Amino acid sequence: MASHLANIYGTEQDRVNCAFYLKIGACRHGDRCSRKHIKPQFSQTILLANVYNNPAHTLEGSTLSKEELQKDFDRFYEDFYIELCKYGHLLELHVCDNVGDHLMGNVYARFEWEAEASKAVDALNDRWYGLRPLHSELSPVSDFREACCRQNEMGECKREGFCNFMHLRHPTKSLVSSLNASQRLSRRKAAASGQDTVGEEMGWTPSAARANGGGGGSWRDGGDVGWKPTRQ
Image (cartoon, rainbow, N blue to C red):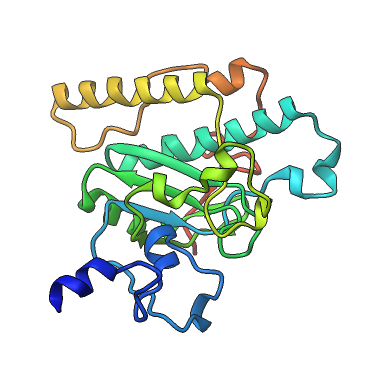
């Protein structure tokens, strides 16, 4: 009996736990879901809900070119990557481009250690971004390959942004490579000097986004779209 329950846990056959919440960390039914959303007490993954606002989904952004939209997203991705590295070893960072309320603008970050994820949640729940307070929580998502829409990755999803699986917005590859290399360098320098935190200095300028013509504010210079002071 126990073996049978273990086999169906988190699947469509599980009549107790919500498979979508366990797999994606979000459910379109929210609190009205007939199945349980058991929030993890420990996890390597955190969720920042409804943070990214894709200009392409707004009337004002409808005239922007693909290149301008990509630069805008690269600035956002860089902002969050650098900030999240302050709390530990960042392994993955993913941003949803869905338009359904439960997934729209969600940011998921997976750290090496559960303690790092908990530290990030505690800190980020006292922060603002883009003139709005952040809401961060531990997420049950552990395998993003299972959480993402495979049909979308092949350009075949008919539900498009209303799909209940993740449709990810991808940053420029050169930016990701630079950020990953910078984190490795920063961690090596911190380890050599005996520091506890490694994200204070990413060790590289200018960023790939700005080198490609990006601009605008970030949490570092206090711009309108960047990190804001702790809540009063």
